[in-house]
Length: 442
Image (cartoon, rainbow, N blue to C red; front, top):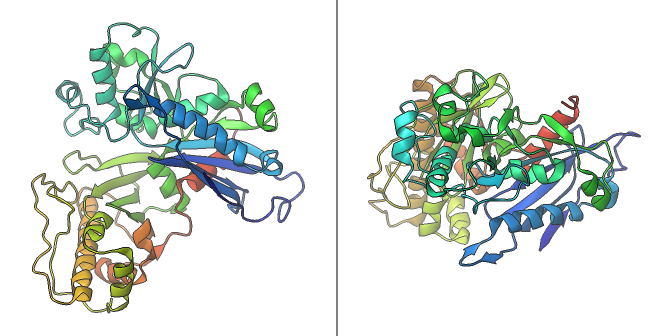
């Protein structure tokens, strides 16, 4: 079902001949679009859950994504569609599709973002530098190696694409193009703008896509797409990015020291830095953003723990009773289950949620404050590893709505903390489309 909300009218506030820019976000369970003007004002947005198709005993995700792509294009009001000058798409990081390099048809079911190919990890670790981003079972490179070692035929005509690459190909028709954010987890080095020699010397390097900057125009929309949806002939398709990068772009934090903390089921932080930080021990890695670096890490603490202990209604009522300016004496390490990676690398770390006071508001206060301390330690670790010191934090995710928690975090971090005005990845993808429209077709 489409949940659509249009904001404004494209004829209102637009100059004659002014164009619009479309961003699409393909997440874990559904997709959404946002159409913006050059000032960043939203003119239309909607979302859709993926329809589920079975192929044998597994889901046919490729069909789900393709159907959703064209269904969302159909959902954009026609008078808005006719004004769109460029399109970009983000997808889940490390979601990998091996396709036929001539037809674009998948040769294998897609490897999803959270799928671990531990069978390939020893091989990848033997060729990659120590603590490299690819040295994780869920990396794109582990997925490629796992596929390569399983399959005998079709290798010569194989091509690796990421989810966003493949969806964009459906629109522009030029196979084999990716961006340096999506390509990071297959081993691409965005600092020198090429694949490293240790990767190029492997047999399977023949299936790697060419890589350009996110938000770079690849070409015009295919004729059949223009005809079917009534787009203008000059509408360009631009390289995309990953969903988490697009969400950061949406917050429009453009200066080093600005950061976004996402308080969803986990606590994920992203900090804009002048220096690149990589440390697989803590799951810390950097994405290139033009001439800066987006350094990120994720803790297992966050909303999932709160959900285990309280209902949404309880969280709301108990939060009202908290004085955020007063420090809680309780010292917890809230985790949904054993294991932490960042800012402490300990796969066996046990959750610490005791002693529990008789007053539930005091208990919640202690948990919220403990999560804030973990957040402060996370930013502290990034500084210790060499990143730019954080000076302002924008908040995304469900936890951003809790004003008492925001005030607690502001006190614990000793920094200004505010809710990001825009947090949807689709909005970030639309900003990439706007950037691409301002460049010449390559």
